[in-house]
Amino acid sequence: MNQDIESRGIKLPKQVQNHPVVPTNRTMLMAEPEKRRRQRYVEKEGKCNVHHGNVRETYRYLTDIFTTLVDLKWRFNLLVFTMVYTTTWIFFGFIWWLIAYIRGDLDHIEDASWTPCVDKLNGFVSAFLFSIETETTIGYGYRVITDKCPEGIILLLVQAILGSIVNAFMVGCMFVKISQPKKRAETLMFSNMAVISVRDGKLCLMFRVGDLRNSHIVEASIRAKLIKSKQTKEGEFIPLNQTDLNVGFDTGDDRLFLVSPLIICHEFNEQSPFWEISKEQLGKEEFEIVVILEGMVEATGMTCQARSSYVENEVLWGHRFMPVLTLEDGFYEVDYDTFHNTCETPTPTSSAKELAELNEKGEALTSTNSKGNQTCSSDSQERLEAENVPVISNGDIGKIKMDGCE
Image (cartoon, rainbow, N blue to C red):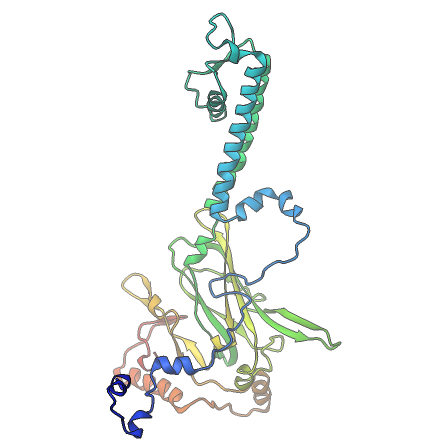
């Protein structure tokens, strides 16, 4: 509009010309400096961000050709599948044509008294078609090998044997690739966030896992690793050092009966790498927690693995997960709408080591969380007591959800 007015020769006042720019979401987003994307070791969907470079001994891939073909992408796998069959058909078709050419069958096509090696074979195209019929055992009955051709009988045996080997190899490769349990991991869920709160009087790191299918994961087990660079006492720098997080290995809690969503817990004890980490220090650290869920697919018996990870800004201090399991009339119902939901809970901001020292001294622990957190729990408790409604609790089971904490 200013340009239109200026083009007409009308001069606007100075205060109108230098009008302030009204900030919008778009202008604020463009004005903000672009934040550096946090490089993850494992993506949320389970993909590992590791690429192998300068691999000189590529022959190792050919020594295990079956696994190499299975690991190929579908478009390359189908290309190899098509090329292998086409190549063998053309190769044996050329051999059949060569035998007919050497024997002189192509020169006596119209001679009824001549006994060819393959009846009705009059060129390379017919030899190629006969090769396909032989290897795929179609047998149309138009072209047939005669008993006056010993070299043809030998070639027929060789092609039948090699054709069976090719069929077994390629069909087996396709079957394994189709039945791979990678897609089964798509229905295994991990919570978007991990939380830190007090459970049974101890600080714990927790995350939630669930299975969307009715068919269960047999022998399911869970593992967790802390990925964090460190420097040894000798000055050696170890990038992406892996440290095990105990999620119940010594007690058997890492063996899961994954029928309904479960909360996996890692206790902050003296063996935990989070033993001396407080809430303030947690925001300054740079780490990644990789969780791995393994088990056998009930339908196929094949091993399935699902992975996810949590970086430092995906770990919420002073939160806990909302209940997802409710008791209905004759069954338990899982509400996946609240699978990722958390609510704040009073949690000390000190490290587990400091809390243990205070416990030894017999001092009372006080929460330094915001006032709203305490109000959330107290208000919900007063409402439940006032309504005098019983709450059924069994792990994650809750008949009534705390509305103030959602």
